[in-house]
Image (cartoon, rainbow, N blue to C red; front, side, top):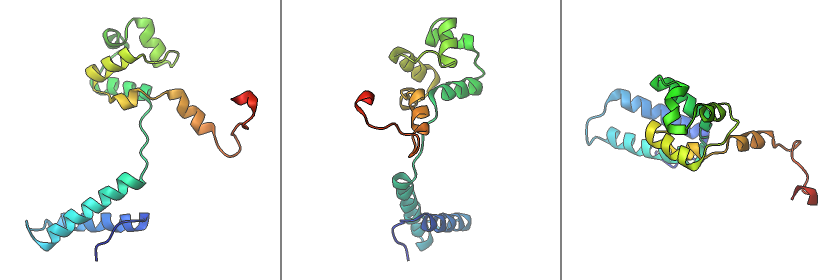
Length: 141
């Protein structure tokens, strides 16, 4: 019986069944093909709602794309600016400007939602835990 996926265990079972059905290569219009399509839709819905996906760090995304395309720091100068700006960005001493983000998105195809993140905010969030949080006093407002 097919039902909504609500737990990790149910998701794992659905993925196993999807794999089995794909291996069987069901005939178009068959009950197995319909089951495969329905399970895939249910698994996708569960993943979208339940599995949090973190975006990559913007600087790591730039470095990754540079590596993929065999680019050097010098190749980024027309996109980011001077040699010193490229160095400061890649060494996290300078933030990306909106115009840099636009050019990186256009030239390297890096998603703007990745580039718009503040790398420092991830560090702050990682250091915030039940024992690391600052108290809410007037000096912290």
